[in-house]
Length: 362
Image (cartoon, rainbow, N blue to C red; front, side):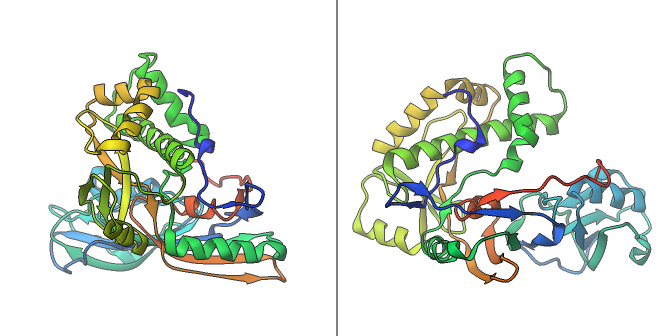
């Protein structure tokens, strides 16, 4: 039980007649144009203040590279560049950045000329852009090599996802290439390596905590089924981080759950008492006991108990299929902190071609 892997995730939707997953193969992220992401902030920049806000579209480039290029262009430390969240490299993504202009002459943004990075919009705001200030991300994704024989089943599952959602697992990118972040977290916890940099500590702790949550969720799906409520739930209000405890599931709670107004949650493990009760509390305590190596180290490193919704209901989920090219286009929006790949894995077995990087640092 201690040797956890991301591929142990349970799916929500299965073919009940054969108890096998309905997962046709699909080529995923063959080109950056196949994966488009547009970020929406939780607020509107005020168009005044000492921080330049830049809406930037990047292609086949990671967020940290954009930060590095902005800092170089403005001749400021990288730490003065703000962003709301990291975005996929192998994609075309649109996101906001901020630059603190205090004490410097504002550069001519028209002269910012870096391959695959374009400034789409420029405004101002009184404060630096902070990580986490994302309301949602809009996705437009193209998948290929999908036989028409699978389309009806795909559409049926898509309809279920639109109404009932999908499991809110943390995605593979949380754990690093070949789960290196998990391997390093284990070595750190075992005192085999020292980790001095604060950001590296944060990455390894987040990876370990996320993997523990994923295992909790897979175990819950295996034991109680998908979309079933348990006495003692900590319910979260949709679109918020507000929780309330339900000692015993009532008809009203079931109705609100069905409508998507509230969602059940599981522990993001840390020190402190669980806020769940009854059956759910017993379940969470048992999972933490089975995974005590990880749970104990997360507590020892100072993380505090938190909660995460176990399901996500996407907004504006739409799709189309082209039988001539055997390509499937899907569009949807997800709240911050959730993963498009976790929705796609309910529909497809994703096959991502190996692509050579034009620059390993980007």
